[in-house]
Length: 103
Image 1: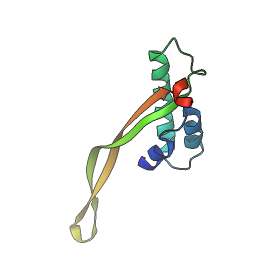
Image 2: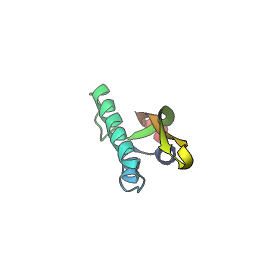
Image 3: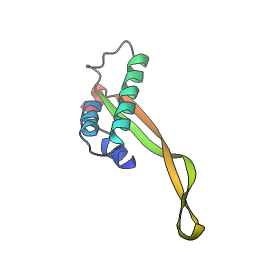
Image 4: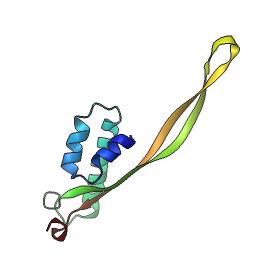
């Protein structure tokens, strides 16, 4: 997940969506859905601005570790090996570029 987050950090939203859509990594579908949710939240907060005129970009994205499920897998001679099923927390901040930033 962190590899994909590093790949889209600082890019425009439409470019980031294209990268995630055609990526072969398993996590790209979940990250793309989260990115579209962040864009919808931005639209909801900024109803006076249009999505087309405001060039949105991924201002900040980071992946933190989440809960780990601890399971045991049977091993030879009556032993058990621990399996850690990891999860994560993703934070995406989407912002619009202003004309002064483009100049």
